[in-house]
Image (cartoon, rainbow, N blue to C red):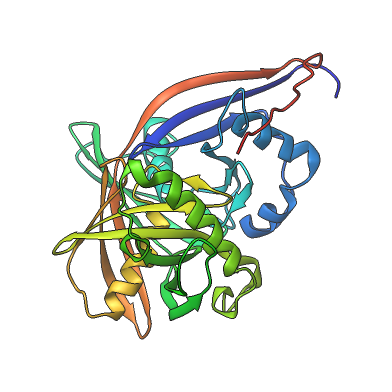
Length: 329
């Protein structure tokens, strides 16, 4: 592998969910667009950086982060490839919020110290805008306008080995495909004490929907496939608690930004027109609303906040037998 590898990052959390932004140490990722670069990032010399940062002993099974790449054109400030322990995702709302904070804090985008500053980001699923609100030079919140979101299918019946009967899920796209189901359908609730069972169910539901027609993106097959399963509880008017189990059993500690967009698409189709307070399993919240409707498609906006947790210099000693690391889940 040659000499020592060094990678530098700035870490944030959004609603409790980590987001590791790589600032140096990634080979150039080829491609004319962010979506093309997502495919090319699987090259071994690039992907080992993802594994190095995401796997133990430098990361963990629920780590999340990104590579910064050029935007698709001059209309955006930056491009981004989102990653987790199992690969590269098409969207990430909590990451978009963190990128808005990072762009302003780092000076990448000149900000209004008393007002709103738009940070435009090209992600694999399209172009999103993070509107950073500051007061007295201090960032107070970030609202990101997501890609067009829509309901894909309602009342899809699937068989889950651990359930006593067939289960009905709804499928919606919010930058990635999500299956939604009440936790109560399994006699559970969105609480940490039920997390092990919800993870197992999330994996089983995702496996049951593999290659299902409802999980196909209508315009670009590279965006197809169920990314996550959202278990939710109704906890009051305009308020839900959720946990999103994504990739291969990863748990979103935040309320899940792109998942919130998918939930808004479903709720809007049911006639909901208010503001959704979306709570996570850790108790953190995003607020979401539909700001525009185009037939069956909606444009959601989700508000949250990210906080910097560290600045890191990671190294890989070529003598290290563990190499880029491992995962135990």
